[in-house]
Amino acid sequence: MKEVLKLEDVKKHYLMGDSTVKALDGVDLSVNEGEFVAIMGPSGSGKSTMLSILGLLDSPTSGRMIIRGKQVSHASEDELARLRGKEIGFIFQSFFLVPTLSTTDNVALPMMLYGVSEKERRTRAKKLLEQVGLGDRADHMPSELSGGQRQRVAIARALANDPAILLADEPTGNLDSKSGAEILKLFKKLNDEGITIIIVTHDPGVASIVKRTIHLKDGVVEKEERRKKE
Amino acid sequence: MYKDLFEYGLKNIRHKRLRSWLTVLGIVIGVAAIVLLIGIAQGLGDSVQDSFKVLGTNYAFIIPGNVGTSAGFGGSAPALAGQVTQRDLDAINRVQGVDFASGILFGNSMEVQYKKEKATLSVSGVQPNYGKSITTGYDSGGFFGSSDKSSAVIGYNIANEFFDDKIKVGNTISINGHDFKVVGITSKVGEGGFGRDDDIVINIDALREITGAGRNEYSGILAISQETVSPEIVGDRIKRELRNTHRVKEGEEDFTVFTAALVEEQFGQILGLLTTFVGGVAIISLIVGGIGVANSMFTSVLERTREIGILKAIGANNDTILKMFLIESALIGLVGGLIGVVFSVLILLLLKLVGVPAKISLELITTGLLFALIIGTISGAVPARNASRLPAIQALRYE
Ligand SMILES: Nc1ncnc2c1ncn2[C@@H]1O[C@H](COP(=O)(O)OP(=O)(O)O)[C@@H](O)[C@H]1O
Ligand SMILES: [Mg+2]
Image (cartoon, rainbow over all chains, first blue to last red; front, side, top):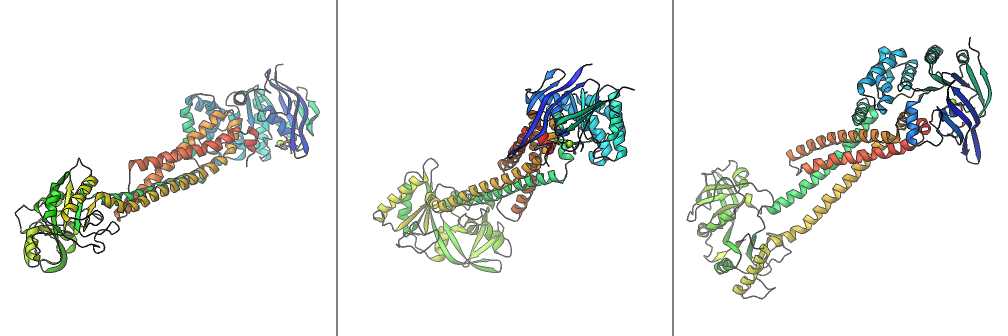
């Protein structure tokens, strides 16, 4: 199995006045291609911090991070931006669509940033929207969609540049249980098609889908569960 | 790539919430304030300068008595009485640099009648060459011939506004019972034309016959200097020449030579004040407009810090984000500037219609547009640059 992501003794400390908040305090992680990993843990245990570092949205205080064999701790800002656009698709709890752009334009946005031609962008955006079950909402504005539909658009957008890894931070946290379940099913389908997924969640239902669950507590990995393939 | 960024900006503006229209409105108001205030101030300045220029600058006007420099036209009584005579006129005609000089006699309180209507007006009796000094042209007709002693040239106001019936070329007016045929009506020159619009001009000999003034006497002499000579120098020469004919020392003149320079000196203060005022208004409106534009751009971009975070999260680098916002804020600036300019030009036109001096120039329009463009771009780009430098996670967390 090929390793796509690796954290080595990653720490993230925040200085708050006199005290230090240790959001992450020495985390090791290795994720192989095609894995579906869940990160669970009580609120404040460092899940979002860990995912932000994996998504190159935030940088660790110390430790090493490796994406597809490439050490990124010292990459330039531009290089980090390129990796965020190409290698990683990030999905947020509150969707974070650009409110002024249509569904299609939102999905096409990461492609625009990488110089894909307008025609190609539109075609691919349509295809991705169909893939997440929103083929008939191509020209809607985000404000005209339900939460579950918005999250689907966000997933389509995350897939736009064909990334190696999808990272999702509580993607069902703002959704009712039915929409949440559908989003999880979508993730399962995407993972079955080969994409690596790391998902932060409180949803116990996730445990039945994923093959591996990492439990965080106080910024360290408390335990790890692996489910045998059935 | 730039085409894409341009489209992104356009879409963003088009689908904008109320907020961005408020931003545009802020720019509209800023630009309109600039264009309006500068337009009005420039119009005021121009109207004063225009009225000053009506008679040109190449003239000197010599009147009897020393009125000093402090008294204005038609001001207080002469401090030193004196006369201006044919001898002075001959002397002035000999002065180097004088193109021609023309003696003028004023008839005050003349009874002027047109049809049944009578009025008390002043009449100027002039020598035939006076016609050459009317450089502002005629509404209709022209000047009377050199031996024509029964014709009159009247000002625009006398012809069109003074009497119930309008006077036309060919009509007859009577002055103290003598009939004069109107052969010319001068064009309207407006304020500052030194009364030309309200003047009635007839042959000097004809006026002498009516008033019984002496053959030698003039109320004043108008001297026009040659184009090639400074009117100021000519004025000084006339002064020197007249001191000789009047046998007076410098400082004891019993006559006064008004030149454009002197008039300018009198107007100078007003003009200086006005220039300062126009400049001040321009600067204030630039600052006020600039702050308005910058403020609305600033808040609107600041509110989009999260969008900048989203763009970073999906792979935009700082440079691209900066370009996006530069293009977009330039567009907003341009749209706001255009609306502001159109709006304020319409108001300026309206003001002009009701008689407020307002000036609409291409420079003013360009200034307004450029200003909106530049201030809009800079004030949009600065917060965008700051936001793009935030770590993505921080920009995303921005509320
Ligand atoms: N920017 C920050 N400044 C200070 N403390 C922070 C910051 N971000 C997160 N933390 C702290 O780090 C800890 C972990 O946060 P987080 O990763 O968001 O937890 P989780 O997602 O598991 O709820 C928390 O105690 C939180 O208060
Ligand atoms: Mg969290």
